[in-house]
Image 1 (spheres, rainbow, N blue to C red):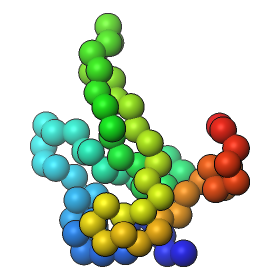
Image 2 (cartoon, helix red, strand yellow; image 1 turned 30 degrees about the vertical axis):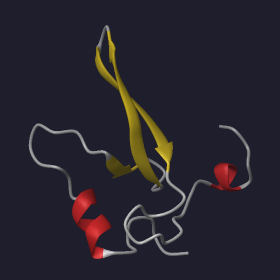
Image 3 (cartoon, rainbow, N blue to C red; image 1 turned 180 degrees about the vertical axis):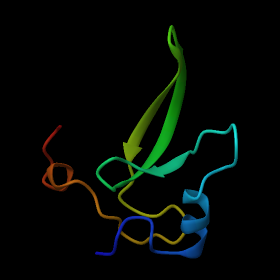
Length: 76
């Protein structure tokens, strides 16, 4: 399996970021896995983000690398 986010030009372009002042909806998390923001919510400290690891590229459908514990079905 290839490095997460390296499957197609469209995803590579999206991962470069939405531009100054905007938050990305797709990003590589601290473990290098592709993550997608599925919800936002206001918190006392500002806007909060709820994200989930993506198993497949939303553009080309290629399988993405995920964390080892998620691949084994273990909650972190």
